[in-house]
Structures are given as structure tokens and as C-alpha cells.
Image 1: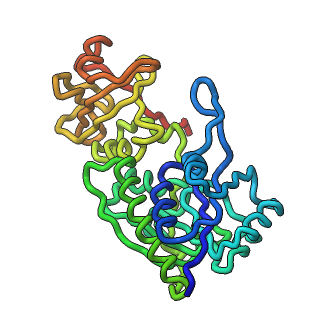
Image 2: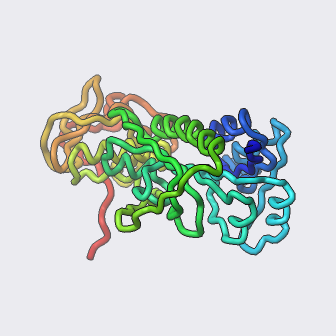
Image 3: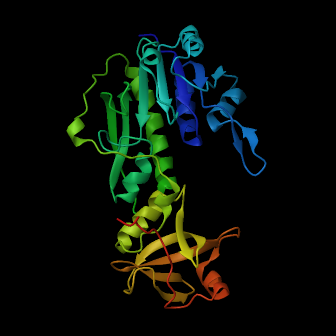
Length: 315
């Protein structure tokens, strides 16, 4: 079989290694990314990393604002001559009319072992929920949310110290390798339907997902920290002011949830519902991050001080 021509749909930096791996082996006839967005204090209009890289490489680029009902873009994809399209963290739902354009349809690189963790944030929720193994699935895209049949799948053990940042790097490398394998084996791959009864979901994170749940066990607090490390990060409160916490680990100790148990060169020890956590770094609002001991001394935080966190809505 002649190597397939590929249209690549992706937006963030996570997708860049996947794009690079594909273009080393196959002809990329079109790159599709989300539109440029305002970034930073100056709200400068900035292209997503995949779009910027496509321009550097001189690859044809499209950044449609919408896909559903966009006949102009459908024709652009058709005219590209793509035999197959690959999506990697593109960030938009694909309508059925678009999925039918390439003769081999769309392949998606999903960073979980489907049907586990369908949705926008599988990396983050796998860590928050304490998983020790995840992986990458190459699936045939349909009109559902990550419901299409599986073409290839490979597990990846999660190292105990990994946050969402390190796990994303590992999964991006894995996805790069698997998608090249899948494209090389088209059309001989056999699709396997997912078992919907086993599906779990990984919704998009919101800022409140980063608020510390001091009432949970120390391991759950650290797992949440690992999952939200890239965004929205771990947030606690002191006298109503927000604090970004990093370098969390499980330690020994007991007390009221959120109670500071100790401050020393190793950081800040705070009680959880079961056990305690050690915090290495604190970043107050509108200030730089600093060692937890330095922050505590400046803020007058001593054993017995209580830090706030997430509070459930009253029933």
C-alpha cells in the first residue's frame, strides 16, 4: 500500500511530538489547529503551538473557528488529498460530515486505556484518582465522546513521583510511536468496539478542582496535587487569600484537617483527614513562589494555624 497522506488536527504543545513523528514518515498535506487566542497581560493574539510549528515547517495550515456546517473547510480538507486524518488534543468536536471526508476516516490518539477516562482530561483524572497504570489508545473517531472502536492500545506504568506534567511528556512520546505504527499498518488494523458498560469519564478541569480537600486522606491530597500540577495547580487559603502550593508529599502527623503541624527547613506539615502532607513551596497571590518555611515566617504562620481549602456547597 502507498503510504497514506495525512491531515493532522492538534493545537497544544502536547501534540507537537506526534506531529513531528508523523511528518518524518508520512506526507502531511494539511495541519489544522484552533484559532489564535489573546495571551498574557497584553492579550497579544498568539497562535497555538501546533499552528506556529506548521508555519515554521511551511505546511498548509487551517484554523477554522467552527467545524459544524463549515462547508468551506470540508472542501479544504477534501482538496488536500488526505487519505486519513489524525487528531491529537485538537479540542473541538468533529461533525459526522467531516469524519467521512478522508477515505480512512479520522484516527485519534487518546491518552487513556479506553473505555477508561473518556473526555477532555484523562491524564489529570487518572492521577487524581490514584491510578498506577494508564496508557495510549489509537481509536477510530466517531461522533461520540471517545466512543469509537480501538485500533491499537498500549499500557504505561505511572511513576510514583510523576505529576500531570511528567505523565503528559511520557504519553506524548508513547502516542507518537503508536500513531506511526497505526498509519503504517492501515488498512490492516482490526477495530475492536469499546465496552460502554466499563466506561469512566474525565471531564475538563475547572479552577475549583485545584482547591485542596484537607478532609481527605493525605494520599488523596497528594494525588490531586499531581493531577492539577499543570493547571489549575493546588490552591489553599489563608485569611481569604489564595496560596499556590507545590512539592506536596505524604508524611506522618495528625490533627484537624488543614491544621499546620510544623514548620522547618523541610517545609510545612499540614494535617489531612488521615495523615499529613509536607509542602515545599508556597506562592502567595501576586508574588513569587518561595520556600514554605520562608513564607511561613513572613506570614506569621506557626503550628496551630489553619489553612482553608475546598468547601462543599451546603445541602
